[in-house]
Image (cartoon, rainbow, N blue to C red; front, side, top):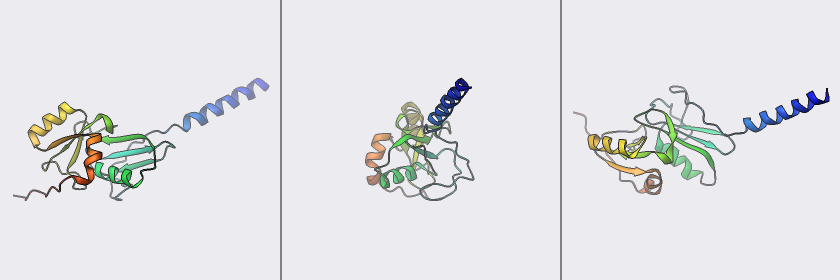
Length: 155
């Protein structure tokens, strides 16, 4: 009986340790709200997510909402910073992506920021859509100084 209690205690400890790991959550498109702007998250090409070191998950309608949230919570530390890529529509580590800012690719919050899985894909998209490519660090560093892009007139 004592051995059984010992193994049960080890099992509980293991479950407690595993359940404390910060883990991303899938975004429930059309239902989850943005943690920054409160809009419903609908476009799989532009969503983003932050997971704190303690496991709290914040979901975003657009990359610009994620960056604004981070700028307002600079003391917070994050285990995961994820963006949905335009080409794959999957949450991917933000630091490993490239970012195209093109007036031909409007993001939900109007900053025209589109994440793609790699620099080569970003360059192909830039050749087709125009714009400027940024790394994650360049985008964060220059975010507040990005020039305004006015929407193109509808024809």
